[in-house]
Length: 203
Image (tube, one colour):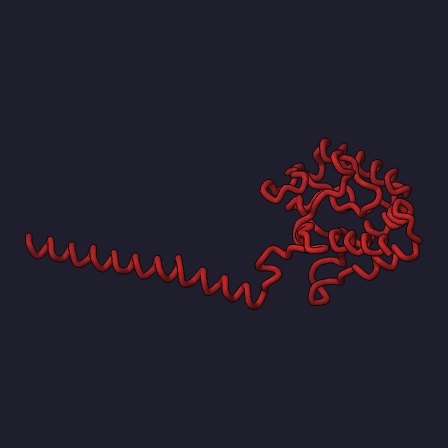
């Protein structure tokens, strides 16, 4: 009986020591090492890729946001607009509408959105690209296609009193190509583009 109790005690003590060691290694040392590597090698990304303008945080390059007229849900003609968001760009409620491509509700919403985007930008519906009327899987995609940026150029230029050629150049300068030359699609980061637009409008 005593031997049994002693063995149980030794096993319990060994298990407790292992628990303490693993807790220290996986709960303290490992997170500190990973955090340290992230801060040293990927400081910007590890801190959320926050963008500052004049010392003020204006958003993240990784998270889309609305560009509406202040206090309304209407898109501001002065700014380039991002993709539609099912979660109203809330990073705590990401996700798509979960509607299938043949769902009548999605078809109706896309048809209405295409008409709205075409009218807002003064272009035929045939020129409205897919990403202008459909949300991404995350609902907070920060990028748009060069085609979507291009159909917004004239409207943005007129609203800001800028030459169309200068705004076109701004878009071209902000087009990022495929990652490693073959991954992803060419894209434009809306936040970075609008920051550059604001700077252009100042000058």
